[in-house]
Every structure is written in structure tokens, then in C-alpha cells.
Length: 255
Image (cartoon, rainbow, N blue to C red; front, side, top):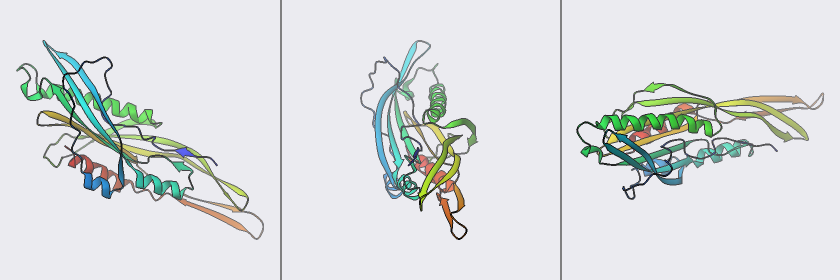
């Protein structure tokens, strides 16, 4: 029996920690996420991390930032696909993550020559770059940023949405039936990613996720004898438009 793991489950959103940074910010509250929507959608929290993510001098002032990130996996979707493929494709199929980032000095108390927008733009640039790299780290190939979409949060922010595409190489999966082995060359399944960064009061939110961007369906027929023909139908039943809409609803409701 051969298996192919989809997205491994590590976070693909947020900022990486900076080694050796000191921090005077204390504990950072987690982002406010739409718990009811997550529960109804079959999502489960799989990780929580707290890291110092920015340490940079802007003229005479040093600005540091610390984040708390929550990671969720769509365990209902993962289980459904694993069952449909008889355990041949397993692992997390879709993830959602959000970070709450605090700053020292407070974003609203920066000296006049240091713009809040400049600091937020720096965080956004890092978040987008690391989002793309972390998609690659998850085993996705041909990852690229494909554009930017309009995006408005439930709190009225309009940060814009960076969109990405990649390919998960599934390759060939095999099924045994009636003593015969059927090989299906799945090739690769496209994966989409969305990430947005915006300022809420005196803190910044990073939110986004990755999800399948296409379905896979195929039929293999084999003649076992002149009188017996066996057919194997595989349809993962993936619905990319629904995953995209759900991910962006989760993002919009986070603060």
C-alpha cells in the first residue's frame, strides 16, 4: 500500500521567530477567531505559538514585535479524503492560521518621524515572503504569487489579499481489487493560498490559509478476462470555491 501525504500540518501563515531577540512585551493575547464558524466547519486547533517576530531600528528608535499564532486544521475534510482513497492520500488538506502581533513601542505611540504605516508595511512584507516560503516547506512545488484580490474584514479594514498557487505532487497511487493492482497517476493537485495583514487599533493581524484548488476524478478500467471487466472510479469530491469562500470568511471575522 502506498500513501501520499498532503499538507503536513505546520503553519503556513504568520512570521518566523527571530533568534536571540530580547522581548519586553510580555504575553501576547491570541487573535480573536470565529470559534463557532471553525467548529461548524470541522476545524480543530492543532498548534499555538508565541514568538518575537520583529526587531528593527527606525532611526533612533528600536521597534520590536511579538506574536501569538493559532493554527487550525480542517480535520473533517482530511478524514473524508482519507476514507475515500482508502488511506492512500492522508494528512491535512486545508489549514487556517491567524496571528496577533503587539509592538514596543506601542504602534499608536511611535515618534512623529516613524510612521505606523511603515511598520505595518514591514510586517506585511515579511508575512507575505514567509507565507510563500512556508508553502514550499510544506512540499508544494511551483509556488508563486498570482495576484491580489479585494478583501474587507468584518471590522471594516481593507488590507487587500495576496493570493498564491502551488502544486502538491501526489504521483501514482495504487489500489488492489480481485487480485489485481490498479495504478492511478494523480500527478499533482493544485493548492491555493491566501494571506492578509492589517492594523487593528494598536496591534496587527496576520491571517490566511491554504486549501485544495482543484478536484481530482478519474476512472481506470481493466479487463481481467474476456468476460470480466473491473472498473475503479475515484472522485475526491473536492470543492475549491467553497474552501476559498470559507477561508476568506474566517479571515474576515478574525481580529
